[in-house]
Length: 382
Image (cartoon, rainbow, N blue to C red; front, side, top):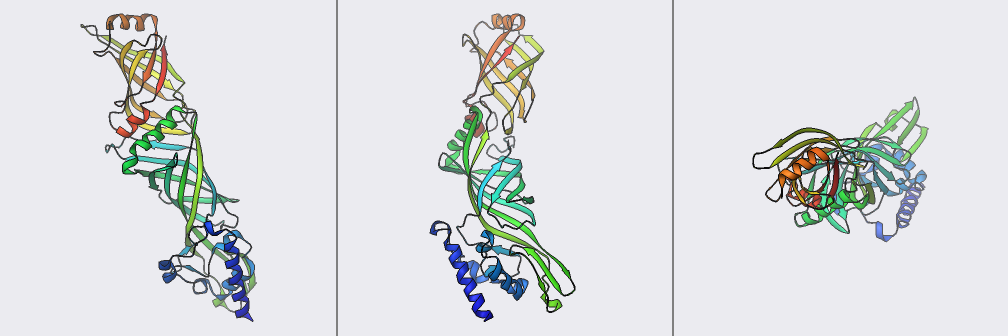
């Protein structure tokens, strides 16, 4: 009778999995099946009995097969191809382009919210992700995040994205620059993150003499224990195979509409008429982004007449969310006509500069330079 119940339950499990549709269902890869063990070897026969009889109606429970754990009972494999994540939201995204290696870009996020299917265990201790970044239908970069603390709030897994290197796909650097451009000049931009979430979960045990109480990936239950050997030990289990694909929308820099002149720090006119004007400006960043760019150079023009003024370097440009006080150094160049007249006009009467990006904008990172070459911003010097 017991064998018949278990056999019936496994058949029901297969039927439940089929309800996800062929598009999202796949068997465990052969190499995993070979090294997977019966869950009774990890947690005892009574747990299999509970799982097959009581949790088939839980979405997460339906994903767990009888042969799901690795041979040391520390990793749980979900069937390949099943989407267990409804969506991902980033509250913010931080980029760093200042590494001496011009092609090394890092990112992080103070908060990632992962909306998962009901029934994912609530005793998650940490998580990490293997991610592919897709923009305009093209895979342009990959990154793997370090392990970070994670907690469940209902069906939402809250975690962070630690500092990690972005691997831009070799022949997609132009596309990645276009992605940076979209975040820079648009009020918002939508892209796709897809990949796999890995979580570590503590399967906890509470017990009183003769009573077994277990909570974990198979739900919670209490039953009379026949003997002390029936008790399930508490352990950390790594769950892998949690696939996701989600649109993510972030507010962008919107072409830096709020650059405010703060004060004139220094002004110098050379004997040949060339000049240097050093100012402090405030760039207000209301986006969900922050970025470290190092020194960034912009071609500079009179905003009204488009007369070339020279170049402006924003020194060690770091844009955090909120106010950012930056030193701006504007100098004349060989393209500057009548530099003495411009110097007098700017320092005595004021001027509105138009800052334009170019392929030389970043003196360190060619991907960033192309990404911000589309910038057209202005600052008024009173």
